[in-house]
Length: 405
Image 1 (cartoon, rainbow, N blue to C red):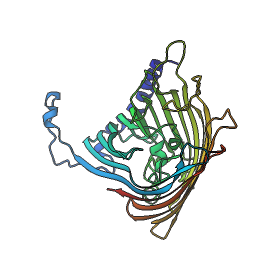
Image 2 (cartoon, helix red, strand yellow):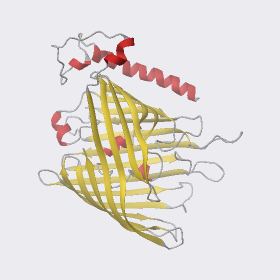
Image 3 (cartoon, rainbow, N blue to C red):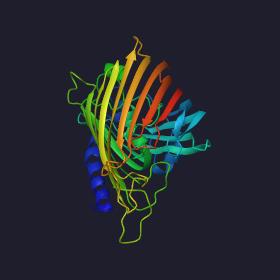
Image 4 (cartoon, rainbow, N blue to C red):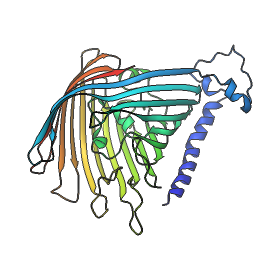
C-alpha cells in the first residue's frame, strides 16, 4: 500500500465519519452547535453578517486561556556507567516539564493551542521547544459519534494522552512504551477522533475521569511525519497510528475499558541508496483498564519491531522485534481521595529473536499527596533491572512537585 493510497483512503474515511456528525450538530431541527444542551447563547445580541473579506477585521476571540503544567523534581540515584559492573551516582534538581499552555476559541467549532515546553537535557541545559501547535475543528456530533474533532499541526498522537488520563502520574516519568523509546506523545500531522456514544453521566466524569468519557468508548486515528515533536522528518514516509477503546459494560462497570493501539510505518532515518530500504516500524498494543473513584488498575501488552528514531535496528538494517508488558495500580485514600499509593511493573525484551538480549524489568513504588485540584507532591522509588551480566541495576529516589493551573 502506497502513502498516496493511505492518504486518499484516510481523507474519505474522515469525511464519512466526521462531516455527517458535524452537520448533525450544526443543523438538528435548525439548531446550531452553540445552542446544544450545556451551551449558552445570548440571543439578545444581533449577529452581524460578515463577508470573507471582512472576516479578519470582524473576528472576535471568545476566550483565551493561559495555563501551565510543571514537574519540578529532586533525584538521587545511580545509573549504568557503560563500564562492566559499575554505576555512576547522581544527586540533582531537575525541571522535567515546563509547559505554558495558550488556548483560544476562535469559533464554537474552532479551537487553537500553542504549548512551548521548557525542558532540561542530559547536560543540564534548559531548552525551549514546541510541544503542541494546532488548530482543532470540533462539533457536538450525535448519538453514535459524539464530539468528533480533527487536530491539524503539531498534535496529540493517539495513545499517550489517553493512557496518561488513566495513569495520572506522568510526573513520575514517561509511560511504558515511550520510556522504552518506541514513540512519543506528539508529532506533526493530523489526528481525528470522537467518543462512541454520548458522554457518561456527570457523576462519573466528576469523580472518576472526564477525558475520553464516551459511553461506549472512544477512538483516534492519525497520519504523522514520524519523528515526533523533537525530531525533524528525515524521509518522505509517513506513519499511520490508531487507537480504539470500548466500554463493554457502561451501565454496571463504566470504568472498565478494553483498548487496542497500532502503528505502521518506516523509521525516521534518511532514505538509503537503492536497493536498500528503510527498516519497518510497527507496534501493536492492547490494554485492559478499570477506573474507580478509589482505585485504578491497568495491564498492557505490546509487540512490535523497530522504533521511531531507528535505534532499534540491527547492523544489517533490519528492525529488531521487541515485546513487553506493563501493569499499573493506584489506590486512593481518605474521603477526599487526596492521598495515593502507586505501583507499576514493566517488562521489556529489547530483541525478541535473541533470548540473550537485555530484558528490562522496572519496578516503581510511590506515595502522592494531592494538595488541591491537579497540584501534587510525589515521592517515588524507581528500580531498573537488567538481565545481562555486567550491566548493574539502576536505582532512583525522586521527589516531584506538579504545578498545574
